[in-house]
Length: 191
Image 1 (cartoon, one colour):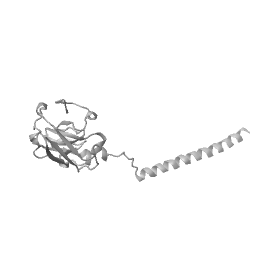
Image 2 (cartoon, rainbow, N blue to C red):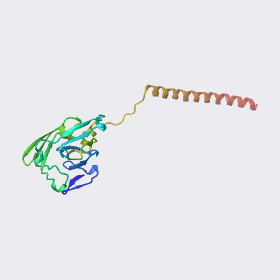
Image 3 (cartoon, rainbow, N blue to C red):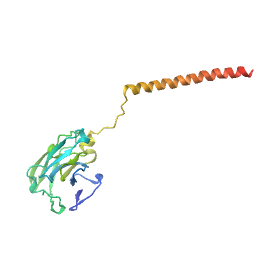
Image 4 (cartoon, rainbow, N blue to C red):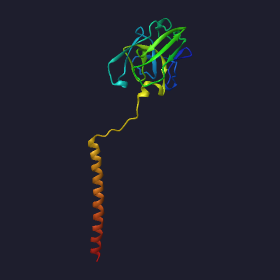
């Protein structure tokens, strides 16, 4: 759910833009790279990144210190007030590296990978988490690390493919030879 016009609304992932505030519930998959602002566990949440790195263990993420005086620990939309600016590094493919700065009412809060909730990860053991969207679409770390799938063939498959080609060629040669011999035999039988 994204905060739009002071109300949380369900949006498609392609409608989410950088700067949106997203409220994520437990077991939901993050649709973009987010900066954790607060959560139901006093600003601590756990994410499972098995779809990114294959690890099933939970990773702990913490909100930036002293940010709670601006971001209330509540899931009620009418009590959330956020006025600020986020200065972020350029999108890159480093999954566990991030540097940025959040400025709220003139106070600066440093951001690092410990607050980063990656696209494709799942929120676990936390009722809800509120995050600021920092990267979307092709700029997310997940998309920058994705590659086109390569088709892999084992040595046995390669050898079998060659053998099938040899068999087809041998059958064509045999058919040609038998067709020639058969035509001679048929002509001899006619005379």
